[in-house]
Image 1 (cartoon, rainbow, N blue to C red):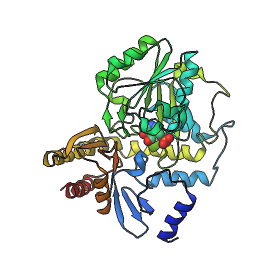
Image 2 (image 1 turned 90 degrees about the vertical axis):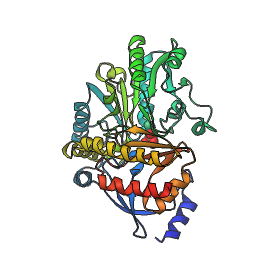
Image 3 (image 1 turned 180 degrees about the vertical axis):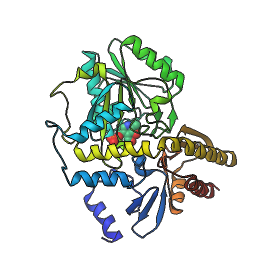
Image 4 (image 1 turned 120 degrees about the horizontal axis):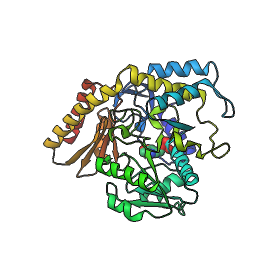
Length: 389
Ligand SMILES: Cc1ncc(COP(=O)(O)O)c(C=O)c1O
């Protein structure tokens, strides 16, 4: 297909739910992407948080190839080896827990919301936070603390109370005898790369323990090595009751996981929740390859080292350009808050071959692959520098 034909097909046959950049990509390898004209881009926002190993990691490709030649799909009323291995591997790296497999972040959060209601036996209110993002399905959307995503889709499911992030007093004020859970991203991605303070998270844990509430940590974006630890909660010295995962775990294929602490995991029994494709053999093999690559290739150590490097470089830019208000984040999850709208900066970076994101209008978001090199960071920072100039 020619470029014009592709755009025409999208225009005529695909619903326009995404704001699109007029680029057609045909190949990816590591942090590089090739467009249809052969132009190469440096991808510092691979797959909106999906590409923690970069594009087409050889171990993921091999795992998928092996599995599709044996068994592509088997439903969840039977057993298969990749699902057993993946569940065991996830739990090996965290705390005693059980998992429920699904296909996306929103679906994992829906599962967490349903789980909480069942756990609550009549308690159903969930406290969430301003500027959070938990997905587009109705309950996940109701949990999302951003009106712009909810507008027009009312009435949303009841039972969510949204309060100011990082403000423990606000949380205390809205707890009632109907409250069952508190749900948060430890670093709000979509909401502008806002980092939860350690005090805040420790206080949330304490309140949940005292009042028998579930602490639900949405690690859809922060998980799988993004912040320099396998999961972001590990920076805080707490254990969530429920953790949701998706995005990067599948290495580019769709996955969602709800991870529930073992002692309460039997709250959901046979027939209470399901997802046809959840935890299929191909995706489980891909996810196992992702977790293996992270360990074998020491990608957490690389994320910590290159994370420090990129934050130093971004802070140098901050000292140089007054339009940068703040640089924040952790590991390889970086937000650069500007005094101006970031759209034109993103567009100019793309023209110069660098793919980044802007969220919340003014926050540039950089989330390169965990195997990024300092040389690639230098290249990206030089482009950003030229554009800011
Ligand atoms: C923190 C967080 N939770 C949930 C979601 C929704 O995930 P999905 O798009 O896979 O449904 C996202 C997506 O960006 C996210 O960043």
